[in-house]
Length: 147
Image (cartoon, rainbow, N blue to C red):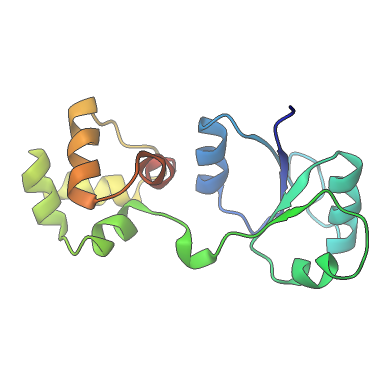
């Protein structure tokens, strides 16, 4: 059985793409395909020719999905469900200070983890603590920390 291959449009955050790739997902981005100025219809045609599912956050693709034009599939995650470290912390009802104290790091460290373009350098023990503290899955934590 072959794995699903995705083609992302320019509306998908780099952090999401990195998170997918870190989990072994085959992803081709619009810039990599040199399709930045393409229309939605052109994206659809290209993705179909490459046998790739379109991964997007653009609601215009819903119209195309129902138009009858051939496609390999669509994936449209709810934008409110995209995971960030700050979002996980907020969902758990915790302050940066509370997370920092539990992990034995400074509040500034948590701020840097939440806002940096680079993934945080955390130990396995800290990952285990974060999973418990934030009441999240490992998948959520990986995506949240894959800047």
